[in-house]
Image (cartoon, rainbow over all chains, first blue to last red; front, side, top):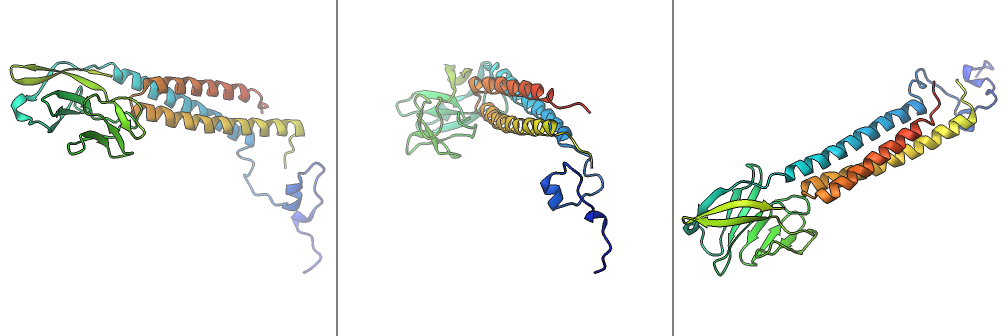
Length: 173
Length: 69
């Protein structure tokens, strides 16, 4: 090694942070984004988060406005006792389930689990509606949650029999 | 190297930390709102949105503490 000094060997300026004295290397463009500018980007991100959260709330409210209109589901004779029939209600993207319970009672619910929206299915042996995602269990007679993480009942669909056909009249959210 | 005076530097650091904390809370609230959306739980989605907007307003107030160029 010769005694020639490199550019970095100069004495640090007064007020230079200790970390910069210990590691006195800089590169071109490293000041392009200052902490102040980066903080402003984060604040803009905060606005995006707030807008998205607000959008989710608005969408949730708007979706609740559709109670459904009277729609025929199927003929009474086509659903034996203990069986389930899947259909869409109130919209074409809303899965629903019609149950013919022991004793002859007909009930229908939205198939969307009230925990995180997975589709529930009917387990006739256990006589329960089961959500496979987090093992939520609902009562088929009332739609109330009886086990697992769901805390609210499944939205019930009001039914009526007209001329041997089961009709869905509306959904109670 | 450009030297920034120490009080400004400390203030910017403090604002940065607070804004990062606010963003973390907002991320949590966004997840809550999306889960409420999935579960059709309006009663949860609106408070999450209100809190998130409140936090954004707070971060805007913090922005005023940043020194102008």
